[in-house]
Image (tube, rainbow, N blue to C red; front, side):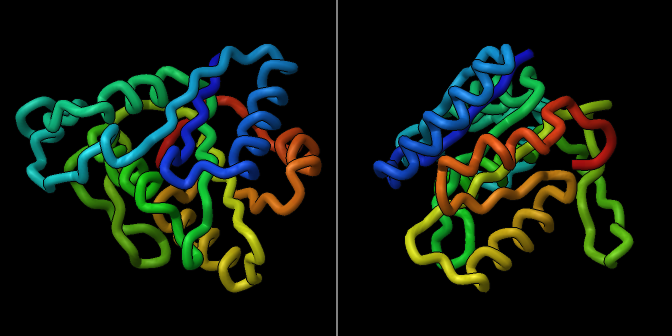
Length: 185
């Protein structure tokens, strides 16, 4: 079993390091091999919208930065954990970039969801489960709700945890299924 832990290096803090340690310890105690990526602006460029990942090299980003490695590590894992500071109710810029750059893992078509929004259908039969762990100082309920809503729009099957006290995180993680998922993300 393999897990991949992604965090925002530019917004690294004592709290993010503590959450990372708790997640890594939880996974190792359950027999997971753990790989990590600490993202910053020098690691990932922004998506150019060139569609090269669909047309020129299906399933592979053509930009040639660290995202190919991030996608490969994510797609070969059973579970991907994003440790994400909540900034104005949303992902941090580097985590949002990583989530957006999952585009090569989807097909270039559109499907309509039951709620009327559109999404790209899956390229592969199954995907790693995705767990988004949001944290921040003095988060409001509105920040937490907005963060959860935005994630569910990006990844309907993702699990969202808002981390107040990192000591409570193992219990919350223990309630999750950490196996690959089929169908839509």
